[in-house]
Image (tube, rainbow, N blue to C red):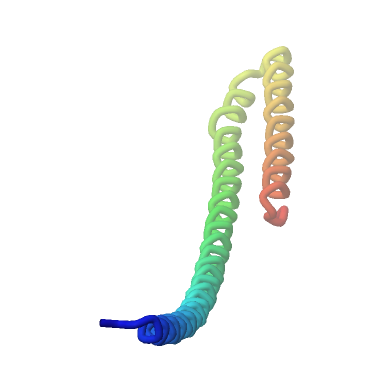
Length: 138
């Protein structure tokens, strides 16, 4: 049978084993923690790089879309001016030539003045729109 001395020695041995195991576990935990920190920093750096890359791509896409929009606005403005000029040439001027009556001429001249005023307003509106979206006025 075991006496008190034997039990005391077993306790001491168990205490030492538990202490050694505990120290080993602490070291293992510290190593794991250090490894995880390193991996987290690596992932964080990778994510930052990816975000910068996406931002750069989006900036390029936005510039491209702005250039396309600018070209389309300029084309539309030219087309509108051409259509207004063609309308006046094809419809208004022939009517003026047909009508020799002074009242008709006055009425048509007022219409032309209104059209010119609208054209000027539209040109001003186009310039305002261009300035708001960052395009240079032509």
